[in-house]
Image (cartoon, rainbow, N blue to C red; front, side, top):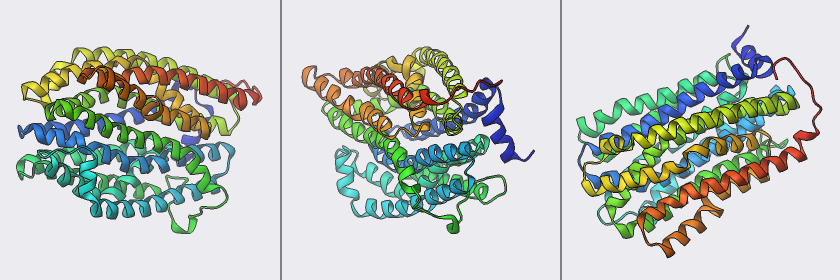
Length: 458
C-alpha cells in the first residue's frame, strides 16, 4: 500500500485510539523540538551572564510571534480546508489549496522582511525595549527578519503536510529545522562570540532547512498535495476558505504577541530583571503549553476528515478520547513543571533578582496547566469543523477580549508584578468555559444533523 493510501486508511478506518495516537505523537514530538529550540536559545544566551540579553529575547518574542501568525494563517486555514476536502474525496481542489498557501505565504513573507527593515527602530520601541536592551532587541529582530519568508513556509507546511495523513513527515521537518538551530546556537553564540546575533542567525538557518525539507516532500510522490505554480488558484472559494479559518487562528497568535507587548510594557515599571524573569517563566510554562498544543493540532486533520466525510460517530469518538487524553497529560505535566520550576529557572538565570522573579512567575503561570489541554482540543475541533465565527470569538477571547481587561484591571488595582502574571491563568479558565459553549452551539447547528453511521472503528 502506498504511503498516501495508508495515511487515508488510518483517517478512515483505524481504531480511534490508534488513529489519534498516530496523529498526535508526531505532532507532540514536533512541539517538544520547538520547545527545546526555544529553551536552547535562552539557555545559551544565559551562559553569556548578560541578563539584558535574556530580557531582549523576551522583548523581541512578540515580533517573532507575529511572523508565526502568518504561517498559522495558511497552515491552520489550509489544513482545515484540505482535510475536509479529502474527506469529501476532492483531491484536485486540495492541491489548489496547498499551492495557494505556499505562494501567497512566500509573497507575504518577503513583504514582511522589507517592512521590518524599514521600521526597525519604532518597532523596537513599540515592543518595550529600554535604553539598556534596545541594541540587543534591534540586532535580534533585524537578523530574524531575513528568515521571515522561510519561517512562514516552514510554519505553514508543518501543519499542511499533516492534512493528508503525513504526520511523521511533518514531524521530521520540524525536528530538522530545530536541530539545525540547536546545533548552531552554541557555535554562533559562544564559539564565535556573536551573542544574541548568533541566536538570530541560527533561527533563520533552521527555518531555511525546514522549508527545504517540506518543499522536497511536496514535490515527491509521497504527497497527494501540490506546490506547483500551475496548481495555484485563489478563486472557487479557495482563498476565502483558507482565510475564514486561518484568520482566527492567526489572530490568536497576533493577540498573543500584542498582549505580550502590553505585559512587557506594564512589567517595565518593575525593572528589566522582572522582564527577564517573566521571559524565563514563560519558557518553563511552554513545556506544558507546547505538549498540549501538539495534542490539539495533531487531532485536527483527523477530525476534519471525519467532518468532511459526515461521519458523526467517529468524530465524537475521536473528540471524547482526545479530551480524556488531554486531561491526563495536563495533570501530569502541571505537577512535573511545578516541582521542577526551581532547577529550570536556575538553568537560565544567574542574577538573583531575576531568578526570584522567574520562580514566582513560573509557579503562577502553571496554575492553568490542568485545563489547557481541553482548551486546545476545542480550539482545534472548531477549526476542523470549519466554524469560522466561533473560532474567531475564541481567538479574540484568550489573548484579547478576556485577557486585556483582566490584565489592565489587575494592574490598576493591585500594582504588583505577580498579579500581572496571574491574569493569564484566570483568563485560561474563563476561555475554557467559552470554548465548551461555542462547541455545543456549533455541534447543535451542524454535526448533530449528520446521520448516525455506526462503524467498527467508532
